[in-house]
Length: 66
Image (cartoon, rainbow, N blue to C red; front, side, top):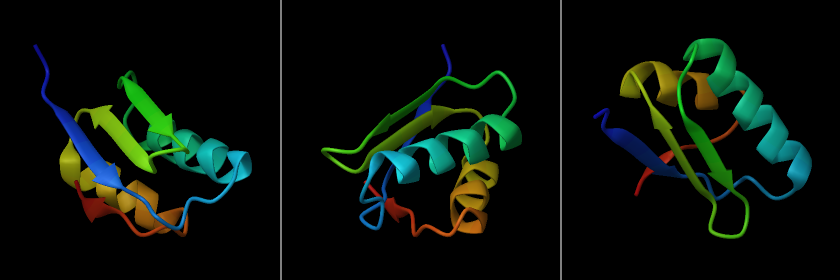
């Protein structure tokens, strides 16, 4: 079983943001399980934590430890 990484991304404010973060993670973490919840601002994913965090930052958002 793969551990999930969870970040809070408070500057995600709309569905466009959700799409941007999701796409960035999909490109950085091929085949990863990704879940993005706008209501709670939670982003969770399987795979490399550092790569996922970097992808979120490069997409213009600020991931914080959950």
